[in-house]
View 1 (cartoon, rainbow, N blue to C red):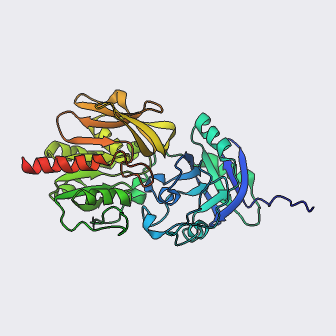
View 2 (tube, helix red, strand yellow):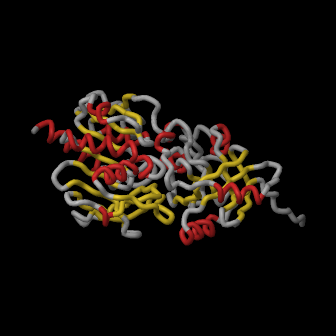
View 3 (cartoon, rainbow, N blue to C red):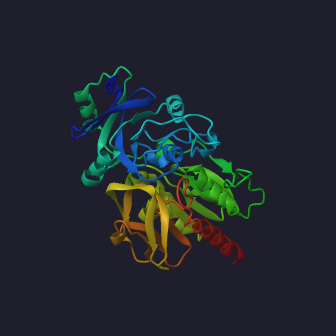
Length: 387
């Protein structure tokens, strides 16, 4: 019986501490350097790769079946993949799903994203949890030639996410309108033709499904770039202001985002709702501080407790920084808390309809336990208009 030699490695993942993982490359060829994180979601690899909050990060997928449903244009959360690369346990198989329009391998290659398969993702995930999210270099070379010293040096030289303002890299170049609603069987995406509220969404890296959720609850959404001023926001005469998700260090993005939010809060009584980086921006504007987490929260199975109702919601998360609840000022209360590590997951002003959450109520991918937050935002705008 013939003995088959193992396939020659065509990709290499080098950690800054000198740890090396070899595997089989797919997608684009070349090299990229970024922070390495892991995501525990069992579905939605395409949505994860196109989530702007993953800018500057390579994603390790803990679920082994990646690529099995292919990709399709409807599931993109932004126009192009944003995550720097992909790490998986098994090489992707041929897609088997009626919605598939393309195989993952070709999609990654066409979109310029590097991936590596055949990795012990359990070992890698344990290392990230124990040591913190490392800086890494990922290379795909079909000839299997790697300069290990140069790869480790590149990983060590990368400055890391602290101090990085990445929102400016993923935000829209100019304002635009959004009226597409959530996907529903069997018609697919719908259109909001009879909006009740005008909402300005500040784009720090907004996912499309967040905008769809806003449209679904009756919002005529105008999306503005992350650098929009308070004057530009208020010029649209909105009924509410939404602060989107996004990547990078909130303190860096806050240099221009916080003054805008403070001016909106100081000069109006508008309802304000923030998600993820938008949550952190609101907290900074109210006087709190943010901190870098050891390995962050990335997945679709994170339990969060609503401290005001006692209800526990299973949520989708993607963040490497968190609001320090100990720094919340008077007049701002903590509303939600992670049951994994006790970190802050929500705040609100005690006397105004201004609140935010760290997790993703729009899911995509993930559970929809928290969709009611969009309805709460719409109700706050309706109450203000009626009053």
